[in-house]
Image (tube, rainbow, N blue to C red; front, side):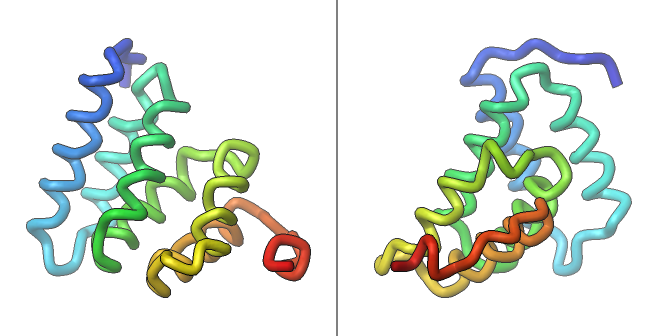
Length: 120
């Protein structure tokens, strides 16, 4: 897929549209996830794509959060997400599902941090 240069507003709209389309499925087919993952990877400002997905992760229910977790595990790097995901885990107002999904993404990205380091 050709690299696409989009404005931040267009990126946000694209990400939200993809999440909306995938929410129509009870079980999202792997082919659909792969197709939309490639579409997200084609956006040049990947950092902003990751930022939008990470913010949406904190706003959605667990099922949609699992799809976001798959996207983040595929397109993000540990450097870009580590601090934000650990902030979700440490925040007492975060839901258990958000903390769970954050931990899964961190492990998928190769985080081997000692939880005591962040939770103390």
